Image 1 (cartoon, one colour):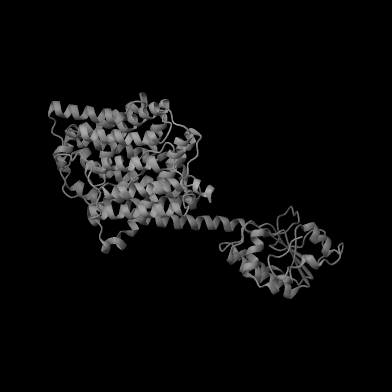
Image 2 (image 1 turned 135 degrees about the vertical axis):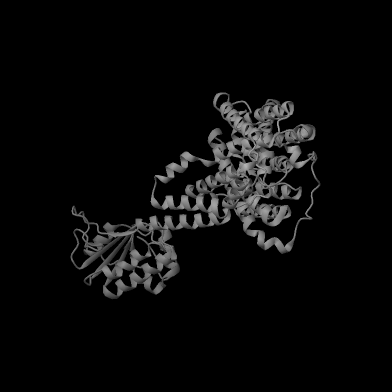
Length: 568
């Protein structure tokens, strides 16, 4: 039990127990300040793209960012709002209002805490790459489309959340194109990309944002700013409240909450894995999920957005010399100081500059190279990728993830079923003439069936086909299961039916090399009376000796009356 509790111990406590000294604090302070400088304009831009106010993004990065670092299972994780949430958050706000988003975020936090307690963190890694690449690339397209209004300076009122109606609405007001906004946003995108290319250590987002705000202020360029759109920024943390909760909306918001929880879990654990690869450390996945859950509950309580681990900011934290979760906690403290002291200045930031930041974020999310590589793989993976991508862009992220996972499961089952076969053990240079053939060196009245691969519900037909492919009646049947790693209930029932058929037709049936998992599945699905008539042996050589009469009758080779069948 004591060892189990260590799996839920936050890394911050582990670090403090190991010893935390002044040089560590200095390094963490520098890293935390560096990440805060990067996160400041990004948090505001992501909040605005999600349909919220800029201060909502800042308080999310402050509160959720602090808790994710303090309670999480990674030494270097930086949390806050991310681009992955933009689509789902914008959709929830459009449909249910901001209170609906807070409800969904609170519910998602509870789901994440429960997932961590249930140790589901290790299962999230089984989400296939075509699904994650499909929906992240789709999100990138939607983020890019959502910024067209500010990039082009279009004068559009309420813009629909769906992609096609959004593009139609923007096309309808194309005559309002503002060249100053377009020129500024283009220059900002170019500036960020050039800084990343030639001086990647500098905070390109912040430098470009400050320069854009200075140019607009000095030249009185006619472009929209944070202040002109949202008014005066509320530079304080609100008191926690759950007044937004409405029981009548809980069921309707559950799918959105599940999607938020899934995205938060996937992205946070992916970010933790990236941090492990960069540092050689190991994260605690279930602790990380629980920290994400607590952080999202707290974020909802103070009016914030969904939060998760941010890969780019985590990587920046590591490159800046962070040594512990204290760096992430200090990053949140620095953001709070910035918000309290610089709110009047932040109102001068042009919307075109924030749109440029999100264009770069979308370009990073798109993973065009990875997308192209998956398109070169099998038809099944391509179908999963394109279906998830298309549904994310044209329908809904929740639907896209659900359909993508189901399609991926079918592709996987199809591949696994292709591994299952019945082969003969005779080296036939012309290839197998049939799915059943006698084994080399044995008389014609002895039949051998060699099963290979997992026998589960997707491949149970292989076993069922054997019933019709046995051919002439044999005196003894040998079933070789050495290469069967898995037997699920469907496969076990089919194998039990085959054993019954063979026992009815022959004098003796031997099962060779069945592993413990296979034996357990047979015992759970097949009658003990039937299993007592079957002889289980470990190797084919023992079976061969028995059927050729080289060994006398051995009562121990028969299945026992109770428990697992005995195996020699």
